[in-house]
Length: 357
Image (spheres, rainbow, N blue to C red):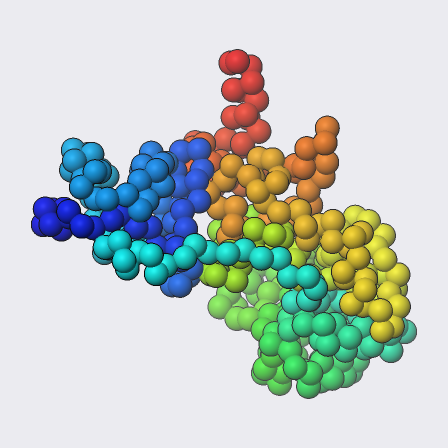
């Protein structure tokens, strides 16, 4: 690394466009969009790199060499190909990332409440959803007719879908569920409510693709807050996050009568009309949630995770500010998660600063 600096008279510091740096108050995050990974650096280094991006290395090398932390981290970033030192002609060949918004919204995830007496309209909705881009289906079934379950699974599995998640709200045997899982390969996860032997079943089948639960509310089974396990770092989600809410973009819920953004949405929704789904999902009312992007939500707009975060919380407007009613499980001032020792909710930190001022 130091040898490179010694031969730096015609080289320029260059941040790789597909490894953008997103700042938080204390640390920044490098999004490695090609390798679907991320890497943290101090905010001070991010400020330095952004200020000196495309600057001749001879003008900044002394500042780097005098700061051991900067030198080590820049060396590591160079090895990881997050930045480079290149000549001017090579640098002119690269361009920055562009983030354009699609004019037409397409679906990706369909949530559907399955009822026997509404199957015909539900079938039409699923078919139309697939025609509008949906490839992942989440099914909620409150009945106990095993033949009907196998009927709708058989039909949906024949469609061009990539994955199906099934929520069942009744007692079923482990053997039947395992048979269901083996029979329908697109069925990637099954959640089944069972009050009997719940702890034993969970313990014995922890590695399986199904789980027994005791809570009878479907809404409570879906994520209620952010989870680092569902962070997504890639060129598609990063581009979408500039224009949309990652969790609600391309997601729709249908209860057999109305559509809305998710089963967690509190609003009644928009009445579904056959052959009109494309107009409905592109309507202004339906897109209030998908258009609530993180860089416009307070306090998310200050977070280094904002372009990788699938946050299921529903933003609201308070005093003309887009925010959340519940606290996030991450505090970007302390870089701690809620399960870590010393964690305090972000609202406590912001409230404390308000009293200090």
